Every structure is written in C-alpha cells, then in structure tokens.
Length: 326
Image 1 (cartoon, rainbow, N blue to C red):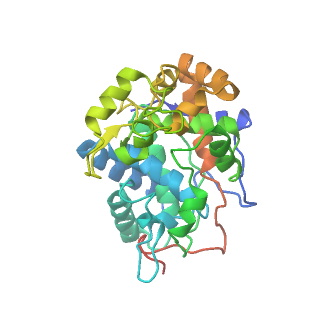
Image 2 (image 1 turned 120 degrees about the vertical axis):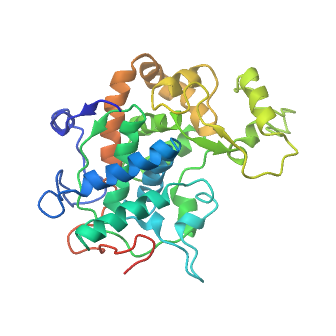
Image 3 (image 1 turned 90 degrees about the horizontal axis):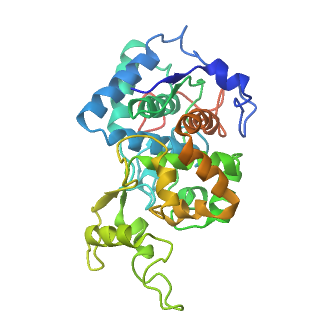
C-alpha cells in the first residue's frame, strides 16, 4: 500500500482548487453522517483488488470518465433503459470500463447502515483514491459532498472524453475545457502506467499509419515495441477482446515508468507519445526522473479533477441504486 499525502500539505501548496463549480466539498463530509462510509468503500475496493489487481486501474479510469462527462456526478454508473443509451454503453466506455460491481457492493453495504446518505459520485471518488494507494501511489484525502446526476447519455461521451488517437493540442484542449491545465493533463496521464487497452485503441499506429507517405507503421513508435504489439494484435485479428498492458515496464504499479517509456518511444497511444512534444517534454523528463514529486502532483491533480462541475446542496440526488436515478 502506498504512502499518504496529508490534505493540509496539498492545501498549503495551493493545490486545492474548485473546478467549474462554486460548491465547497469537504474532507470528512460523512464523519457526522455515515462515519464508516470511506472505510466500507475501501474494504470493497481492497477485496476486489485482491481477487483481480486490474480492477484498480478500472476504478481510476471510471472516475476520470465520470468527471469528464457532466462532471463528477456518478452518471457513468447509470444503466441504459431503452430508448436511452447511457454513458457506460458508448463505444468509448464499453467494454473498456470495469469495476461497476465494486461500486454496487459498496453502495449496497452503505444503504444498509445509512440509507440515502452517501452518493454514488462520492463512492467513485473514494474508490479511485483507494485504487491509487493500493497500486503504490500516494493516498490523499478526498473532499466529499457530491450529489448524483439523473441524466446519462452515451452521445455526450464522444465530445467530452479525449480520444487515444489525438495529438497534443487536442488532448490539451480536452482538459482545458474541464478547467484543467496542460500540466494537469501531463500529470494525470501517468495513470496509464497501470491498466490495459484493447488493440483497436492503438492499431492505427501499427497498420496503415499514413498511406500518403507510404508509412504502414508510426515511425515514432519503438520498432521492438511495435513488433511486440503486432504479435499481440495481428492485422487480421477480429477478436475485440484482446488486450495489452498500457505500460510495458510495470503494468500493475502506479509509478513514473510511464514517462520513462514515453522517452523511449514506448507510449502506447498517440495521446501518450505526443507528450514527447517539445511543449511538454521538460515535464515528462522531470516526471521520469523524480517519481516522488510526480506522485505528490498526481494526488493533488486527482483531487482537482474530482471537483469538476460537481452537484452539491439541493442539486441532484442521492441515488439508492447507483445504476438508476431515483
């Protein structure tokens, strides 16, 4: 389990920012409402992680995908009900997102001891923090008090979530649109040091890269790494379920090896390798050389991201079942 960064440190460094909302979330929000809330979530995440370490990456990614669409409101958890297709069933999220059963299990236990108190949005935020810590990152205090949104539309994922196939200007703009900086983007991209990807997310770099120039393979991709990826993801494969680790150096440990891989031209996605651009290269080098500082910055950036367009007070609701609005 990772070390823990105290909230007062992040605050003292000026890293506690409210993004896109006048709301004030609070550390310890449930202390007088549902004292065991965070402990119960942590217990469910830990049990799931011990069964399948890969679920941690899924929960971190779920938090990101929730916050970038309609803000951190738990809308990514809502099931599709015809004729509406919900966020989780968009091409971007299905089948790549995982860990929904962890949130369900935590919510079931919380409803048993303090019904209608703990939001699904807060459960996701707690679960992401716990996943960071379980995979070797720094723990951090999560300001809470989010409420759940009742709307989930698959169509909104395409305009809100950055594609893995875009360049630096586009991925920077996607984060800027959510009140995050380019530095935040580079820092948060380090989450790709854990987790896995389907071949379809990066096959454009392996086959038919640029027919105009006669390039079948992305020349910015390390040839040995490309050969490895081609063995795992052959051109003729029609199996959509084939996956590879996003970070070949340490696929189960949240660390700065992601940045070392970028410097070695082993960024898996176009949106990863684009960070070697001169505009962001200095930050990549710093992160590659100083993993502890990156960990501190990553924890603070997760807190910042977790406050995008949150619902608080009388806005939204507290869902009794995370898969459907009340």
